[in-house]
Length: 402
Image (cartoon, rainbow, N blue to C red):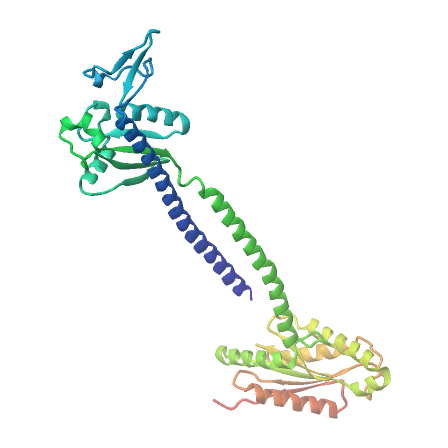
């Protein structure tokens, strides 16, 4: 039963691991999809804002240290507009606005925006190695790229030339619909950060399941053990029953034949036990049966030795690797121990206390079948009872000459 508990525990762990793997895979898929959608929205908002700027020919803001006049618009006579109060308005084109939005986004949520091109007007807008590969892939028809790296998610999509863009980029040879560059967006995102809470949760579920299996498995094992013991243990005397003995004897006789060792059997009967029950009652008889069984069991010191209730007031004893002389000594020891209990039995025909008669069947070596030896032990017991009781009758089975 404990092996089944181990298998069940391993199965439970496997189920939890599969559930964790499947859940983690689906979660990663959903999270990757979500961060991609967020990046697309981010990109679209930048493109829309740039288009709004371009359609208005740029927007004017106050020139200051953070927003100095754009040196790449120095040829534009309307780049700067002086005001009567001494301030100056300067024109912000889409590229300049994108750079300032990038600075603001970095301060606000850590996002990084970079407008770039394979043919940049402004050298600082030159591509990084990753951006260059992305721009080259756009030339081959790829619509967008995204990747996770160092706790960040990097996304990039192409900038498509619109009619409003030709005012600044027409001189570079671009036409409407051409890819003139791209915008890369880097968002802080650690895709493994949510993993530990998930792992801890699954560990807790695994531990709870294992505790459940262990607790109820042990209870089930105990119940199974009790049922098994009930099937092989005599409930009154608390020693093995006849069913168990027959199985055990078969195994021991096979072992004796394999290892070429002798084996002995002893049949035991409580003398005049029917009269004892009639005189003292069945309750006292059950107590005596239990006491006799326990006393005999205590004398069998070797682990292979086995005693069982054979039926009624009869017992049978199995003594592996025991010579005829050794079996006779054990039988006499049992007889004296039971007589020494001094349990009154006025119904006995051989003594005034409870006694036993024993029939011993042994052979000097292996080679006798269990059935034949059991039959000889039963005959010896019958002889002991017929010749006065409270005695041992020893039978040495003669072996055929080899």
